[in-house]
Length: 183
Image (cartoon, rainbow, N blue to C red; front, side, top):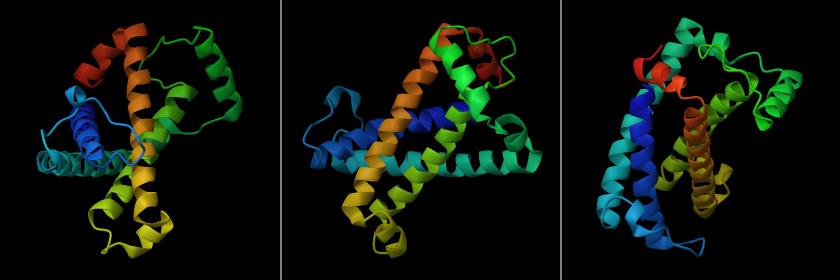
């Protein structure tokens, strides 16, 4: 599920950047070399295809984690005191990675953030895709333009997570073995 999500997220980001470039509502453009789709219609097709992959895979991931109890076991509890200690240790380069199967508090919070951010991306994406069909969601996001801004900011936060996630894999390369074989 991790690698399927990773592929879907890369496709969504790259096609989303091409879609963004069609409007440039924030006043800048993304370099075409890191976008996907070639033109607005092609970018939308890539975006919608990857949206279904991420959505279905995400629901299966959530269902599996809830049914197996993994969600509670792996990601909770989150202790503010332990989070602060782990965050300070991480910033000093002293965070232990003795057992990659055990998530420290920084990892727990980061993965919980990604799960919630993904939900926000889906909800704001629904408003952008089917604004008339979801008037309550649209109003909760301060209209269509608000949903567009929320979607962009949530995507930027996910992109930042991906950069940090990849940096951590480079710093602790044995975690790649666990991610690759799934254990």
